Length: 207
Image (cartoon, rainbow, N blue to C red; front, side, top):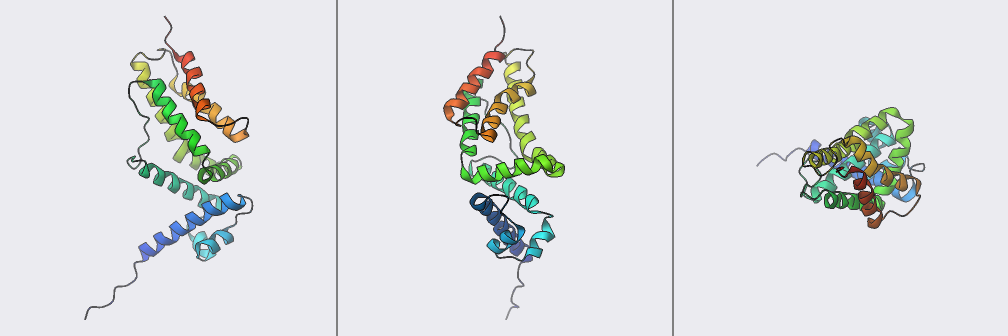
């Protein structure tokens, strides 16, 4: 008769992590970041508070990892390869940019992303270490992908040869983030399309 298998500690840990991530995201969406506590996350996840503190120093660190995990799972569901951060390149720069900015609008309008993103943006502005992690893990790869797409368009003669790809990226995504963060107007596909059209007017090669 074979010996019963010992419990798989790594699988148990992964289940706990997933429960903690789900609990953190749910609580921030339901109650807001200020009212979310490590104790509340632990209770919702069905784990001890000490389990959370063994892996993370604060609720902000829990939320950041939970959000990065959510973004990774969303990318996987969309068919992206792990770690892949590239804009489409169909040869039509305007169409490619509209596609990506529309998807960004949809993400900002999704309650699963809105509350955690706002919480992390606010916390990252006062916690330099958290802000640096958020920027390095999520924002910089996205900005670099935009810049590479604009560089490819510049090499193809579709934008002015003097275009600064990073500055052009900020002209595209900066207004979108500003409108989302400060709620200065509705975030719609029409707004995303208008941003692309306006930015490309300034990037068009001069005769």
